[in-house]
Image (cartoon, rainbow, N blue to C red):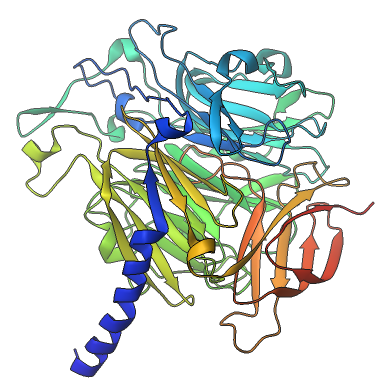
Length: 544
């Protein structure tokens, strides 16, 4: 390498890393009233389900303008005691109060993930849980309580579900529900697997795949299973992560599913009638070498600010996390290695993932949650580690990412959620850790670098009330800023088995005014605002 270039590169990197170290404070959750403790229920028999872990949701369930936290939990697979349950915490000005009992949301089954959306368009966000067993839909009663309506509305999926996403696939203004199913596993018939004479968790290859489910909202408070009608169940994958988005700008939301040891799915929405699986055709189904990898989590975001939704997928240790750049018209280019992500993903087993502008410079960064499956991996693999550091990849104007290892946080991480917990203008991160307390990454970017921001909440009137599937683009006419536009899409379900804040956050750098804000609502309506001031929480209601 040229010595001059090396000196310049190091000079640029050191300030970034130094700034990053002080930007995120790893907080003790109990300091803020979060006494949640995850359990996987393991007791020595290495049940296949135990290391899968759980997700969480950031949800403003009481409509007070701040983000509450819902944690999914496992349980003792032998007894499923009521001593362990999911937990709900209300945000009271940055301090959290356990409201599990009063909200009636302390599910005691073996939980995996969750997603949110206002399925009945009453203005209150509802909560869906995926489980090993029967899934649960909690209807928000608008009085601080929820009701389990799973059976009455027809979405109590039984089996081994993982990710989920509310999606208005037919664009009728009512949220439908996509549920990812993993494998056919029976806890009463758990196989025994070994590697190098060491007891290990079995790989998913020995289990049969399960078909995913799609439920159409009947607009009367019930759902109908349209999996076969829409072609969703025609192919079976071993799905873990799911994310929805309009990848080709035709105003019909598509679906991406990260499958474990089977090809990933990209389901193209054909006019709200059926879905066509095009993962292999578009290059996102397999690795560059033609292998089906161990897809864990997935997410979308416009990391290069060109107006298209790009895709990132997390995979197993010694596999590459995949970054796919959307080139338009369902053409994707894998940029994992050229972007700096590929090589740095090999030492880690990755789960939760998201694009988020963590330093408010106007470019989406990447956060990845890591942790191995086997607690005895050090005895099997001389370079493997059970506890692993999480990663931040700082976006360098859409061309390259610079990694920062969160070395102060070695955990066995799974799901992660993103949102502004303290409403101070920057994105915080909460991570679920296996058999441990969660990790809270408090972000101080807005106070540290002086960059500006804008957070927008969209409320649909013609489209679904949560505005899921709506796209917001901001424009800036300032040659001194390194970007001219940014796009975000409201999405339900994210990363690995988790749910982010439904509000859309934009870092603005030094810009104090957004020249133009364009909303393409999920209904197809368009709305424009001009000269929008920075550093505010803006609520926009769809014009009728």
